[in-house]
Length: 394
Image (tube, rainbow, N blue to C red; front, side):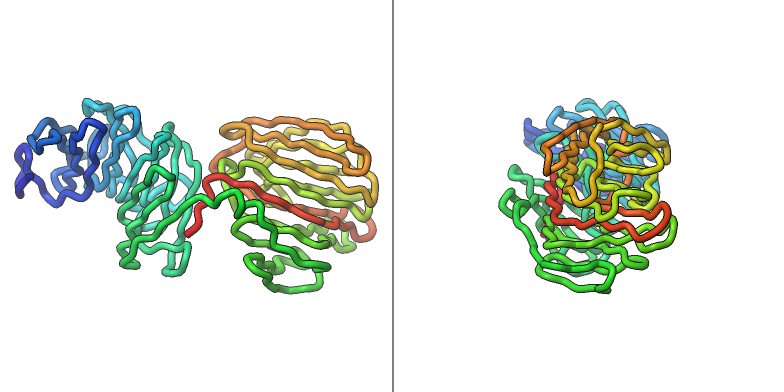
């Protein structure tokens, strides 16, 4: 159907097409700056949009998708946004602006919806796919420039099947890459090593797990699923204010279904110990975590940091040198997480829930120890198990 032109049923370089449950065809008529609708038999039915930057207008619409509720989403390549319309073509809302940050776009082209109404956008010039909930909030992103596994170059099309697998057409790599969520057996797997002292070993790798120093004695762990450390020792050094950390990530808050962190302090005075999700474990501005700070109180706290504003909830669990503590973080909703702390030798346990955590901030799962005064402080980290959702792997 169609021919070149500007009339009803004619096209000028159409780029995207979608089919709704009734068999109607929705076409992104790119250089005519509109979307046209055709019946299942191919007859012209309707159109909406015009050239411009206002609500409901387009500059090179390139992708179109129909959500489960019948609304229509259009990726507008040159305005770097996604607009939502009713099934009748009436403008409803939009999200996205130009940029490379989380939730921003640089030439979005392809777009798709899954059965839950989540929106997948091929963010072409940022070489990634971003995932949004039906309200336009960021859930996940994956990709990054390159031609290796897990990388992309100029993704132009995206599709989702009923099993949740994501198919990405990479115009720069001349390939289709397939992405899916890891199954529970993968997430439960451990990568093990023994007696690694993070302060003395610059780098290394075992299986999927790699580590590298980041500053004096800090350790960055990177793996696709979970890790188990025979004993990793995170030591702060002997200078006041000296911070050392072990991190894994980054993630968005919505990507983490749950995490368990197990650690023991070697010295229990004149120090800060943190276990949880933070944008910067040494000086967090955003995150949710368990913290013991000798300058604050004599008990562990469940802490929320949002834009540098700190909220602490007393967990009522004290700190004893040599005891092991397990911090469990569980996502409880958009921007919300529960922190459960358990002292393993006594069974004492407490939980607190924080809301209003910035969902679009990149967070690291990790540990931090900071010297307040005097000698070095240490955490022996025995294990960390991470459960995730919306973590995509080739």
